[in-house]
Image 1 (cartoon, helix red, strand yellow):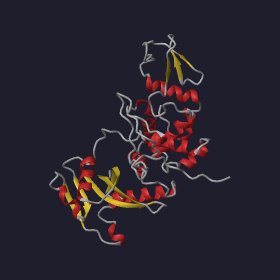
Image 2 (cartoon, one colour; image 1 turned 90 degrees about the vertical axis):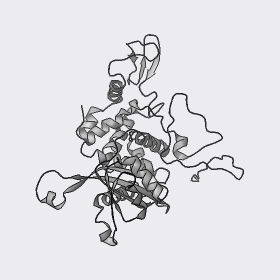
Image 3 (cartoon, one colour; image 1 turned 180 degrees about the horizontal axis):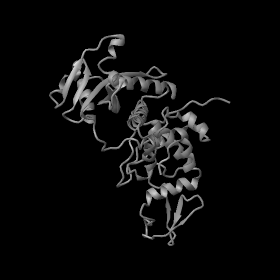
Image 4 (spheres, helix red, strand yellow; image 1 turned 90 degrees about the horizontal axis):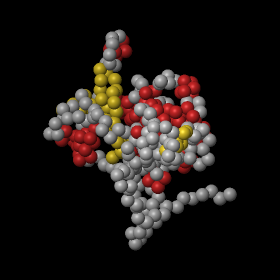
Length: 345
């Protein structure tokens, strides 16, 4: 059952047991089977999160997932999936901390970031057809400039009428990526990573895009004017940049650091690409139990390291921050711990 709105979502998942039953169905679609002894029956705890087979082997529904060893309620996780997956303005960590009654801001921030880590599918299909590509600057409250490249599919609007005649094209899927420079190599890497060969790419008159024709793409470069004239020619990608900046300014008050910007770009693109079926996207986020990648940890989110970095668990791919912050070192090249100022009472 796919909930069709906020009221139905709350009615579908009103308690911890209801959330646990949904996770149970995702994890054991063909019935329970103990990972240790292959037993087919199990006793479930009152909340349904822990299972015990007749041979006394314990199994947790959240083990090995993004919710691994989480002390937060399943209701908090499910509502985080709702806000990140379908709620148009999203939610900030400060707001989520208040609504979910979480004691610490860092806990709410990490929970939302773990949900964001499930938004990008590694083998997702690249953009194709007619694609607009451009780059923009985003400045946060610390006056740090972040360069973001964007690509938007251009699709024909269906139907007839005055609206179709006035705007015959609409924006399809979008890709956003934080980059470090504005050189030809960076632009080419972004296009090869996100756009299928043979597609036609529309760009501005930057000469750094001139190598697209030799790389197997159709390329049309248009010299942009100034002011309002700069918008015409790349309408869709400029509109996405404008919506992204308004979202970061309104919901997150321009407080996103360069380290975490890629995760927020992934969230924005995820909701845009599934805007026609927002409730299906909630189920995509709730399928966290099927993740095979590692999960983000506090140290990787905040860039706090001490000494050597431990090797990952054999057989598992470690979670890597989408835009990691390098660790601090002292004058001798040794790692040192980041310190944070606290308010005096």
